[in-house]
Structures are given as C-alpha cells and as structure tokens.
Figure 1: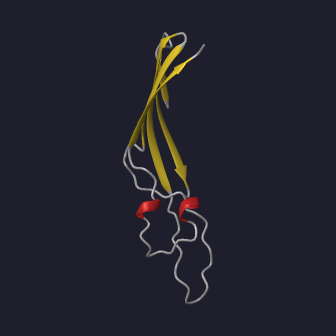
Figure 2: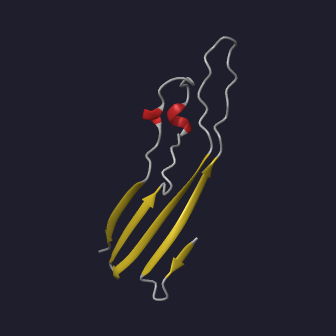
Amino acid sequence: MSYVSLDAHWRIELATSYTEQANTVENEPDAPEFFVAPSYTLVDLLGHYQVTPNIRINAGIFNLFDQEYYLASEVRGRIENENLGRFSSPGRNTSVNVVINF
C-alpha cells in the first residue's frame, strides 16, 4: 500500500512480506530433532522525498513490529535445542540514504 503526493515529491509505502515455514526433513530414529524455521510476516514502513530533480532521500523502518524470525538458509542443519538466537535476523532497524543522479 502506498500514498504519493499530488506533486509526486514524496511517497510513503507500507510493505508486508510473508514467508512460509521451511520444509521439514525426516529425522532418523534416535537422531536429534532439527530446527525448522517457522513462518513469519514482516511489515516495513518506507518513505521517499524528492528534494530536487536530481536528489532523493529514502528512509525506512524495517521489521516494524520487531518480530524475531529466522531465514531457513541460516538455520538449516541446526538442532532444536541449540542456542539459535545468534542466527535470528535483525529486529526493528532503520535505514536512510541519499540518491544523487548526475
């Protein structure tokens, strides 16, 4: 969902992304249980402001609701009772950048 000003100098966007639970692997009997990355939904708030025709400022608040989540590629092969906190993705974070066109 986004809103653009009438003169198109600024824009605000609310973006969501959803990822399903990772595929599971059949464990051997008596083998430790592998961790399965659960599904998650992220919400990001983005803003863009066109200062001049050649300069634009972009800003964003990512993972707006500060949800802990895991990328399946980062936890693949890890066991269920392992300390997995170091493999979680960042919580709420922000970013600002300036784009200059020559």
